[in-house]
Image 1: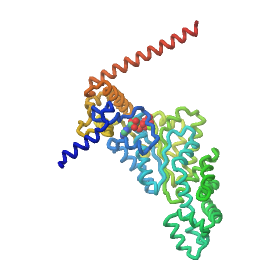
Image 2: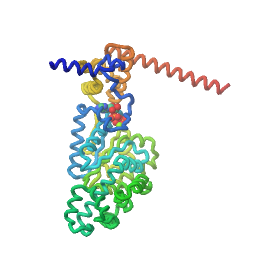
Image 3: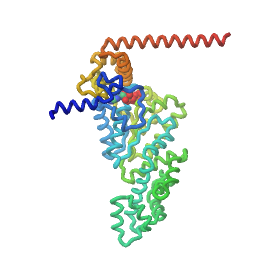
Image 4: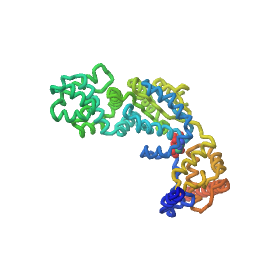
Length: 429
Ligand SMILES: Nc1ncnc2c1ncn2[C@@H]1O[C@H](COP(=O)(O)OP(=O)(O)OP(=O)(O)O)[C@@H](O)[C@H]1O
Ligand SMILES: [Mg+2]
């Protein structure tokens, strides 16, 4: 069989059921563009599949140099990601977070928090939720393994060295050793508690105990960790970050995205509270916590002028800021092509088809180069073209669509005004 024939059958197979979608005529299985501005990110691994790295190489290099290289070098640090609304900040940091989670979670602990409306309370909740019960069991095992290795007297066996080797090989063996009564759980926990808290004034003994008890009393301990008293959550978090380090993770990465969403609705008291809490959290976790925050221009200005205390733990000097700029027209075309490829069935379609280059450039101008807006216009235009059975989407179609949208908005506005007038007249009657 020739290569051509193989290619043909693959294309044929991929076309199965294609006529069911209105996008098939463009060689697409669906409309691949995001339908709303704020990406919903219920599944991070799924979301990053639609993040195009090629257009953000410069920013990613800069984030690596200014932030990741330092943190992976063992020094806690921080970074601010600045950028206009909808430019693509979240896309970049979610990509990095996912990379750390998928490839580095044996040595670091990455956490991604979106808009912590209730401050530390939400950061705590998300930390616990994202890591999950399994992680906490593993954490307990790792901590106990370290203590056992230092205290042979805890091992009730004639061959303690062998037992230690067994635990080093796999710390989950601790549970079997407890069952066999080679280790005594009460002895173990009280020794570990003493060792882990001694000399550490900031740590919360209650949290350490709960983590250690995850091995033997899972349901109750996990339930308590999840419902930790609100007033103790700052101490709880500080303790967790400390325990991560002792267990062998040498850095915790805390990514705080969309802070401006909460910031905008917070009262001055709430902002003050958040600033104080973050300062406490960072200062008490200094050697092993690196924080990355995104912020738009409004937030940056407000912090600089009214909340400079936040800049003590999280400095905002040029070495700690990466600006995510608007994409160029060329990069935007690259991004549109990337999205189209996510749904391309027929590999023989031209790159931007059904869009023309100049159509994309025009959309770019109309949206002032804002990534989020451009992609939504592409989404809507592709739906429009498919429904109308248009061959291509060129400048003329884009202009027509904008005009129609304007008319629709105008009519919508007039109808709304009419509705209000009728309601007012009704009231006056
Ligand atoms: N590099 C990229 N690859 C794929 N999609 C992207 C990329 N950059 C941005 N987008 C998409 O554009 C939209 C806006 O991007 P994003 O939410 O990351 O911007 P933002 O700067 O975080 O916005 P906001 O100011 O609202 O927080 C989203 O739908 C996002 O998925
Ligand atoms: Mg964002």
